[in-house]
Length: 137
Image (cartoon, rainbow, N blue to C red; front, side, top):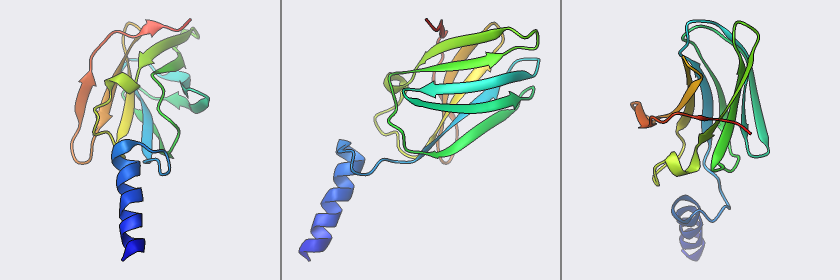
C-alpha cells in the first residue's frame, strides 16, 4: 500500500508540480505556409537543435518524442527559394497553457518571414498565439 501511494505521489508531482523526475513527451513541427519550398529548416530549443531539411509548400515536418526542457524562446531557421537564410526568434514557454502535456508545438512559417506558434492538442487543434516573430540576434 505504501509503495502504491509513493508511486502515485511521484507521478502527480512530475505532472502537476514539474518536479522534473518525469518529463512529458511532446513533438515539435515546422509548417511551411508559404508559396515556395523551403530548405535547411531547423528549430533550436535551448541546447537542443532539430533539423528538418526540405519542407514542401504547405507541408509539415515533425520530430516526435522530445523530452527536452522547453525554453522561453526558440530560434526557427530556414532558407527560402532564393537561397536567403532566415532566422526568427519565437516565444514558446510563456505561450503554452499551464495544462501543456504531451502535445505538439508547431512553428508555422508564413509569408513575410512571420513565424507563429500553434499547439496541436489531442484531439483537435488550436492557435495559442498569433504574434509577429522577431529576427534572431
